[in-house]
Image 1 (cartoon, rainbow, N blue to C red):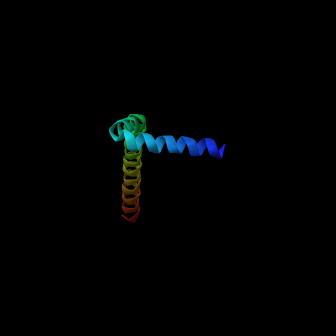
Image 2: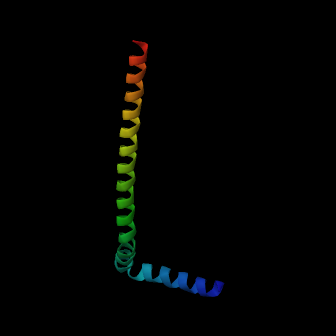
Image 3: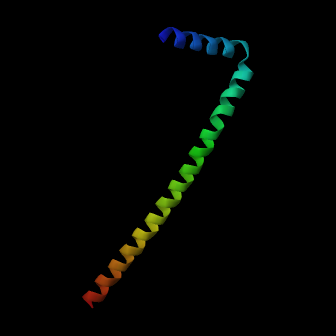
Length: 72
């Protein structure tokens, strides 16, 4: 098992040394879907945080208004 992994790693290193542009192109093509997924998930998380913050501010304003009314 370890020998197989070592041989595979050696093949990858030789490929990268002999054809660096082809290697980088292949790596970028393989990673592009992951980059896209990461961007989409980050955007979705940012939207969720915005909604939560707006809701929190709305609740805080409501509580402040209720406190003002109770004081008067």
